[in-house]
Length: 523
Image (spheres, one colour):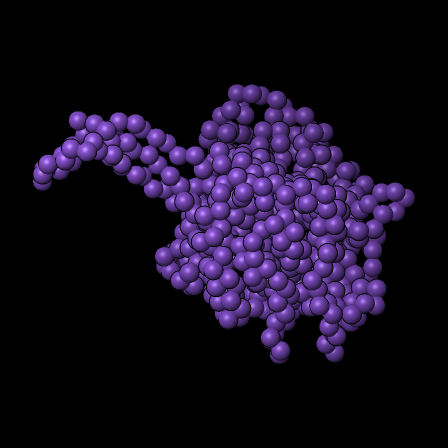
């Protein structure tokens, strides 16, 4: 399954992986692959494990967005009026196809993002859970009904779709994050224009083809690639009713302000600095496993990654030692390669520029006086030398004044901050401008219950390091991790993609009720 269009690489690029020329990744508009106009600008898509260009993605223009929105607007009336049972059948067909071919999609994610295959498959599986949730849309859209609220007057509520909705998704989860939004949006009767990341765009077109095979009408799901111009066009377009965004906090704030200024409903999920608080009574082996898994999975390129390990003394020395030992057994390499029957634990970073940025943070932490326990800059990867490699990195004795604590690094860098008490740790977490996810590791149920009540963060784990909720709960943070009132998926997602109506209805007897100019009263 591929709509990629073969093209010749530019003179500034090396040949694609395996000597195959890079392919041109099309837009998807109105149910078909649409190549960019002649001479339209494109950007390179690379395989992070090799450093070679595998494709070129068009940088969409406002005209491309106009075409996609027009297709979505044209498709909306018929899809809105499609019976809920029929919508559910299409959703279920999509679910079955996706489940059957999830390994194929996972391979696409690994080839363009760099995450190892097992992690990519986990991403697809978590997105699939939202599709399964959306299959229950007839139940999720049920309204309320009050009979005889007044004499022979009934009152009832209904929820209706918004129209054309825009989704702007990040590079770190090219499949799962869009699936937080579009299954519910489509099930509720909306039509979609998706703007994926230009760093790993092929998954979105693959998904579009799958929707067509599942029986989704043309124009209900559209994909426009690009960067700022296509984003701004979506934010400004008068026919786009809502925007769902995931990305960094500065861009989330920009999307929220510009989108709401244009009269749109906006949910903009921003950055994170997730803390894991370890109390002295915790199982330190469990905490060490959790810190490694949550800090270095997907090379730390997760909005839910643990980047700050807050350890209540006197157990920091022991815990740091356990983490260092586990890090020594990790294998960094090509996420698609298997050696001796085992794949790599962690892949490369998504681009060379991002790899260099993360390496700059490591240098800054060292210069600012943090104790560099494990330096990932010297990793010997199980992969090609030109891949975008940076191994797992561990800092100890980090202070809140240091840049590696203050900034969202978005890489495999774990910082240990030592504190003297639970109260000190709680204060540190609550003082942070982000409030996405956090966790506490303890065997004290009272401390855990106090923590979940007092911490100012949207998603909380108790002895669970990455507390990503199931699809029937909402995903979202507090403070600078969320702009807007609605989290992703769950019932908040259903409400975001629908508008409420309340109908007051009276069916009279043949006799006339007469004239009464008074304000209506319930009696």
